[in-house]
Length: 178
Image 1 (spheres, rainbow, N blue to C red):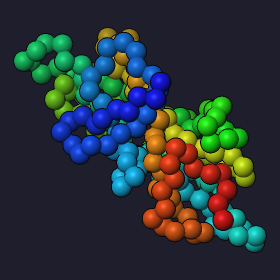
Image 2: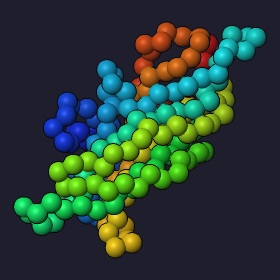
Image 3: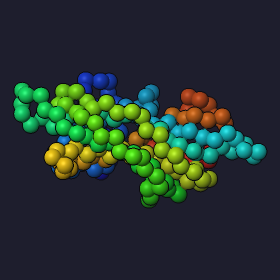
């Protein structure tokens, strides 16, 4: 699909890649730019050969509002957010899901986003592999899913001992760093 999604709720312009959009949703978006990455990759200490390995990816909260169905009346509904971590042998894929977070379900309003906490998902990074984070949002009403969106983080800051602390990966993190 490759659509770039602008962040809602009157914040600064940021983007992530929209991979899936189905059903009825409210406004949504992410913090995800080169200056404000949507995720952070955490690496181990360097081994005796000077290599560090990916240990976790932390995804910063998404923004998700309720679907506006009543015009002037403030609408609210539950919105669930989950993070998936995928691995590939090449930067462009194919991708396989290797880890997932538990879901955070919060109440969202049509004019106020649900408040989520950052999610850290642990992985065992491997040399020659690439890792990326997907955010899945589900709008719920009456126990049923009304709509769903899946977003891919495009920018990843790093926490490591082997490289520059201000380095930013684009599209995915490497499993091994030196």
